[in-house]
Amino acid sequence: MKWIDIPPVWLAAFAALAWAQAHYLPMGLSLDSRVTQLLSGLLIGAGILLMLLAVIEFRRHRTTVWPHGTPDRLIQSGIFSRTRNPIYLGDALMLAGLILAFDAVLSLPLIPIFVWLIERRFIVPEENRMRRRFKADFARYERRVRRWL
Image 1 (cartoon, rainbow, N blue to C red):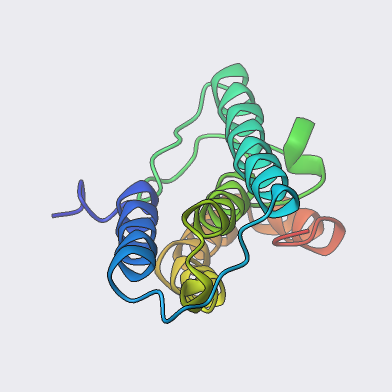
Image 2 (cartoon, rainbow, N blue to C red):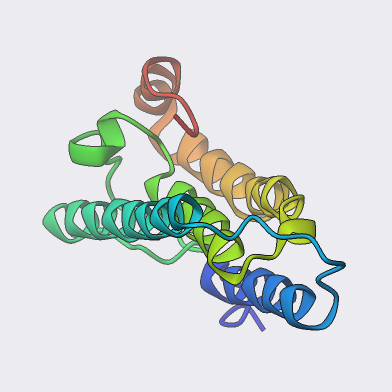
C-alpha cells in the first residue's frame, strides 16, 4: 500500500473533496471573480514550478524523489536553499489554487488540514531519516533553511 500512500494521491483526494463540495454543497457562497481566477492560476502555476524545480535538483544530484525512501544525498542547492520541502509547498499551493478555481469556499479549511497531514505523514518521517543519515550536515541545513517558506 506504500505506493498509494504518496502526496499526489492525498492531493487528488483533497482536490476531489473540494470539487464535490463546490458542486454538491455550495451553500450559496462564492468568491468567483476575475481576481480569484487569476490568483487560482498563479497558485497552481507556482505549485507546478516549485515541483519542477525540485525534481530538477533531485535529478541533478541523482537521488530519490520517493517520499518513503532515504535519499543518497542531502540537496541544499537550487530551490532547496529556500525551502526544505518545495514539492509539498507546491502541493499546498496547487490545492489552494484548485479550491479557488472550483469556487469551493467551504473547502478553504482543507488547506491547513492538508498541510498538517502532509507534515505528519511525510515530512517528519523524511526529516528523521535525513537526520539519521546526514547528522550534522542536516542539522546545519535545518537551522539555515525553513521547512516551508
